[in-house]
Structure formats: structure tokens, C-alpha cells
Image 1 (cartoon, rainbow, N blue to C red):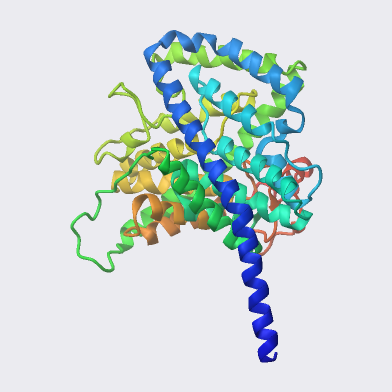
Image 2: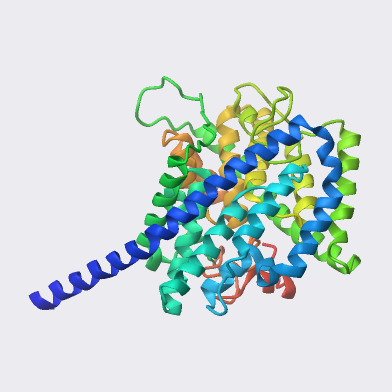
Length: 446
């Protein structure tokens, strides 16, 4: 390649980057602003529920109204995260703009009445919806819109958790098991950084977590072989938990669809079950996000990081409450509940294995999420962004082992297989997780 060819190539690359900056920056600012509004509204709704405990008894009415509105006015927006992933794999009709306000309002309502749901799904759907609209506004080609949708996912994810690097990698990794979409690397990173900065500029702060294990230790290599073995054992459990969460969620959703033909009645039944569970357990700690609570005795994500605090069963109850909530039609994400489940399971396993509770809570926090979404690299980076790089080796082992042991399952049915997790697998490249579950090949549950 001659000198002028090299210069010409670099000029074209700079022009392409400038074009993406012009398109991505305003999109990410809007997404970051909406995420800030969403997080503020979520905190207000949660505080209102704590101040007025009777609100949980409106759960059946809220669920009925939510699913009715989606069925009447949602259209393609009902597809949620899976619609965005499908549109990236096979560009078609795009993602409707109405998805953003619908998911924002419905998720806040879910938390107002006590549904056990998360927030990542809402942020990702707002990001994808706005990215699709910006693509139409700038008249982008299908290939360019595909990249912009990935940038929208990165913007939403990075802003909602305050982890921009993890948000960028998540957007590139979540589409295909075992493969990263490098063509969107810089647009996704730019979108995540701008959206996160915008969210902070609105005064939104994220929960801070701290691992006291090895505090004050000398800088350098602190890997302990016996502890590493315990991490591997726990990580197998994290992967199995991720697999069970995804499979039970999909199975219950399918069962409710077969058993109750009229969709708005499904969350009514689920609400009744949740309220009965609240009564039988004598606690409301498994409702809502589970990030914080005004009641000191409640199980919360932050509480699992307290050294010496071991909780043996909260992971099970939170998983049960979340599966019932989301499988019936309530809106929200799965990720924050997965953080809760993972941190709680890590706390329990630390008690069994005689390991540092706060470290294992952090490992479960990211590893169960890694297994349920098949995004081990994004979760490793998230762990380092949230907890620091001191425990990077343990975080990597936890995420990678959980990824392997979660099998070819996923909370996202539109996710596709790029590289199977085991060499012996005969899975066809490009097959979606939803088709794996329909066909049930021998290694679908492996």
C-alpha cells in the first residue's frame, strides 16, 4: 500500500469517526437524560412504597392495567430487549419510539406497587428505542442503524449502572454467545461515556460498594490458592443458578400463556401469589429492587457486603419473587435482581466454605449476571469498575466459570450462538436461544 493510499484510508477513518460522533453524541445525551429521569423516578416510587405500605395491595390492578395498555398500544414494543437484539441481527421494521415512554412508566409503576424487577431492561429499551429513532432521523443505512442500536444499548446500560466501559462491552457481547461485535467498538464506547456523564450531570449518584478483604495489604500479587479453589466451587454454583433462573423464567412464562389466554389476568394471578408469599414470610424485603431499605433488618444488596454477615436463603426468595413478577407481564429488568441473587448466594456460600463474605458477595454479584446473559467480559469489567481491580483474578475466574456452567441458556431469547461453549457441542452457528429451547437438542441444557 502506497503513501497516498495510507493517507486516504486514515482520512476516511477520521471522517467516519466524526460522523459517528455527530450522530452518537446527541443520542447518548438524550438517553443519559432519560436514564437520569428514570432513576430519580424509581427512587421516588420506592420511597413512596416504603412510606405507604398499602400500595402493594394495588399490585393486581397495576399489573392488569400495564399489560392491557401494552396489548392495546404497545405493538412491537412488547418485544422488549429481544426486539432490539433481533433488529441488530436482522434489521427490519426498527424499534418503535413509543417503547421508551411505555417501558419507563411501566417499570416505575412496577416498583411503586412492589414488583420484584430491575432497571437494566428499561435503560436498554430506552436506549434502543431512541437509537432507532435517531437512525431514521439521520437516514442511516441498515448496517449503520445496526451499529447505532448497539451504541444505544451501551448508552442505556452504562448510564443506569454508572459503568460505561462495561456498558460498551456488554452491547458488543450480549448479541452473540462467544463473539464480540467489534465494528461498533468506538461508537458504543462514546455512547456509554457520554450517557454516563450526562446522567451524573443531572445529579444522579450510583450505589457504592466496598470489599474490605485485603484492605491494607501490600500492593502486588495476593492470590491465595485455597481461596481460588473456593472461588471455583462457588462459581460453578453461580453458573447453575444463572441457568436455573433463565430456564424457570421462560418455562413459567410459557405456562402462564397456555393456562391464561387473556394476558392482563396473568399479572393479577401473579400479584395474588406474591401477596400471599409476603404474608407467609412476614416480610416485604424481596419486593422492589432490593438495593436499599429503610428497615435495617431487611436483606439488601449493600447488606451482603458487610463482613461477617451471612444470609443463607435470601437468594432463593428473591429469585422466586422475581421470576413470578417478570414471567407474568410486569415490566422491568432482570439484572438488578440477579445482582441481589448473586450477592446473596455469594454470602451464603462464603458461610459454607469459610471464605470472605464481602468478596464472595461481589463475585456472585457479577458472576450470576455473567452466566444469565452470557457476557463474561462485560461482567469482569463491571466488577473492576464497581469494586476495583484488586480482586481482578477472582472476578475473572468467577465470571468465566459461571459463563461455562450456565450452559447455552440466557434471559434473552433473541441471543444467538456464535461459538459454542464446549468443543464437543454440535450447535449450529447463528441459532437463537429461543430455537434451542424449542428443539431441545441434547446439549441445549449443557
